[in-house]
Image 1 (tube, rainbow, N blue to C red):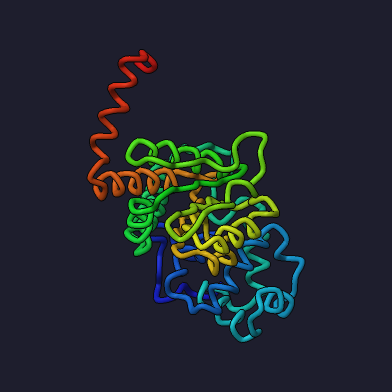
Image 2 (cartoon, helix red, strand yellow):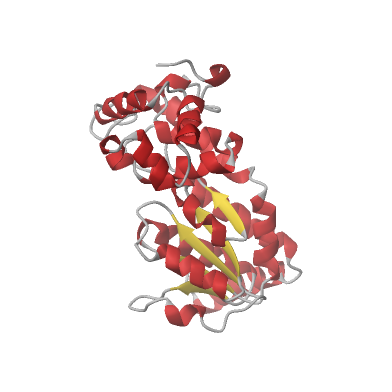
Length: 290
């Protein structure tokens, strides 16, 4: 394979660039890519499972970019051409490069590398310029609606729970057994919708984000890089990378970002500390928690 751009290594992980999976390379380079290259990169991430079935020109058409843009992206990621990308993907399916797989040594001696990769994901999530803007929106909104499905639901539920401790009128959508339409009607420019959309999103996620934006409410998109196509409808985009060195996605960075967002709202609201104290007192009176 070609050399890495300027000898770049995974931030904080100590892993050679040539051994990083393609989606981690995209995440590490995302802020250095042009808008067109980001569109191309989002298409690559969204089609990782079947990427090898496409030709480079087909991928460019799918992303709505030129073949030259797609070629520049490949080179930026350390590949000479799409043939090298296919070779790389074949290596990933065989357990390379450097990726631990379930049942194959678990964490073992690579624990330090795994922790470093997780720390890098968390650092990049917290250092985004959009974090401060999201905190401001969440602190000042009349109401906050948090929505997430499938693997995004636990993150959405935790964000709603944390925000409800520090401000009133925080809702989770949709409630069990319900759909989304009734959750959005009546929202306006004083409200905020947080759409949590990590990969393997339901088919209607994009329509939900567009509908939320159409109400006039501010939209915060909290997702991994594969959700880039939905960013056009968001006022603030917060990106959390899920890839580490293990066989499954990790939501450590997403949960860490939730904690920082809630803490920021607590600091920004004059009534935040009093609300936390009132909730704690209610816990004691009801004897609900240890």
